[in-house]
Length: 59
Ligand SMILES: [Zn+2]
Ligand SMILES: [Zn+2]
Picture 1 (cartoon, protein in one colour):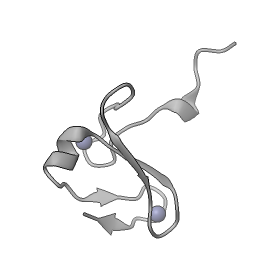
Picture 2 (cartoon, rainbow, N blue to C red; picture 1 turned 135 degrees about the vertical axis):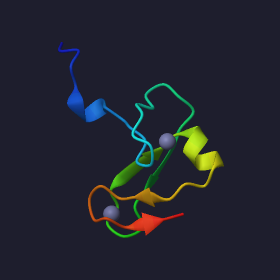
Picture 3 (tube, protein in one colour; picture 1 turned 45 degrees about the vertical axis):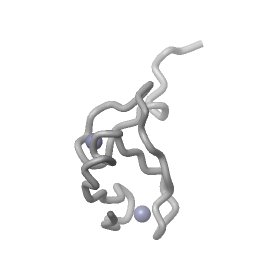
């Protein structure tokens, strides 16, 4: 019904761009299990990611 679903918003945890519809990787935080998304660019550059939930830093 509604086209505004905030829960469907996906953004790269490293650079913050909206990665909806892109070739982004998604995985779960090894610490708290929160869903994390990272764009292909940051994945290629092996940027660090930080879990928005618990602050876990990972490669
Ligand atoms: Zn990114
Ligand atoms: Zn976490």
